[in-house]
Amino acid sequence: MAPKRPCALAAMGIVNALGANADEMWPRLLSGDPSGLTLDASLVPDRRLLVGAVRTPIPAIPAHLSRYACRNNALALAAIRQIEPAIRAVRARVGRGRIGVVAGTSTSGVADAEDAIRHHLATNKLAPSFDYAQLEFGGLGDFLAEYLDVGGPAYTLSTACSSGARALASARSLLALGVCDAVVAGASDSLCRLTTNGFSALQAVAEEVSNPCSANRKGLTLGEGAVMFLVTPEDHGVQLLGVGESCEAHHMSAPDPEGRGAEAAMRGAIDNAGVASSDIAYLNLHGTGTPLNDAMECEAVARVLGTEVPCSSTKPLIGHTLGAAGAMEAGFCWLSLSASAQGSVPVPPHCWDGVRDTTLPSIRLTSTGEHIAPAGRKLVMSNSFGFGGNNCSLVLGRSDAC
Image (cartoon, rainbow, N blue to C red):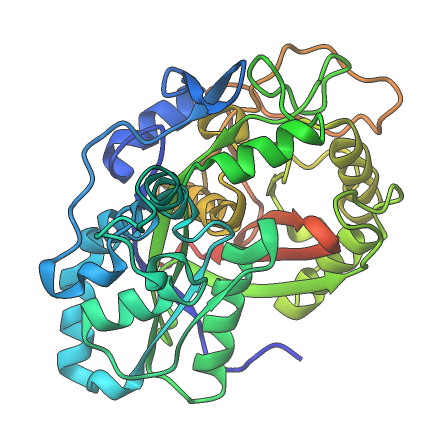
């Protein structure tokens, strides 16, 4: 049963390869601009990878929180500062003990730990700036809670590529249970050698930009970034209406080829929102561009939504931001719903070479400049599917009255 308390995504801060904030990235997102992707030869030996690295300046961690000083937390800080005034206004109204923090990540401060290990190999000492709090998965949630000076529940989730979506789902539950009057929720992930070499060893990284749903798809493009939301129990604005979660545990790194876990998450989100499949007007695909993921997702989408719902993957523009992806792509849906006017909702284009894989269901993929015009309430869905079969789908909505 869906929680009765409303769940508004009241404010959002975001940073990724498209830009340093929503205003910078929104026109680039709608135009399908891949210029934020760059080549990097430092991540995998003897390979130059195309990655969605954040190139804009990011803030330094405050000195009194120096034990948390890593790139992953700095990316989160870049996002949180965009909504900090709204968070502090809510804290002044409800009290610090009624505001929680739920964060998602799959890398934490691994990149900084790699540097510390190299320093240790050279000097037999860890780098003076390194602290285990940078590396711990829980460090992200702890850092945000201390930085914001909030005293509600604060924790970090790490369920691979569904981490960010599950962080939003958890925030919704904290509001529904009355544990919190507001939650800061989102995710951050940073590029590191551990992850890039792992995906490279799995032969999952493409030499060129990812090409989801194409007959020519060869793998994913990796990226980094952060997105943070202020989640409140208000009944206006963009709402998180439904959450569907599943874990099929089919394989450590490969999805169930029939997409049963993905289907269960999608159906769960629709049921939890109390709507029908036909009410979903747009779907942000997980859309990694790997042969197995795209095949199973297209099968699941066709079974749940049919083949006429507009769909797109935004990963060719920013890379796969891994643990941050679920929240990041919910952020793109948030931008679309926030920009809607007079019944029309602009949606991101599906960026690919246009060559259909005829072995996949022919789902409808969006084009540049496309708008959707739902007959009723504006409802969109976002899919996130992670290693180990950790799946999460979200339904977001906004009424014309908002």
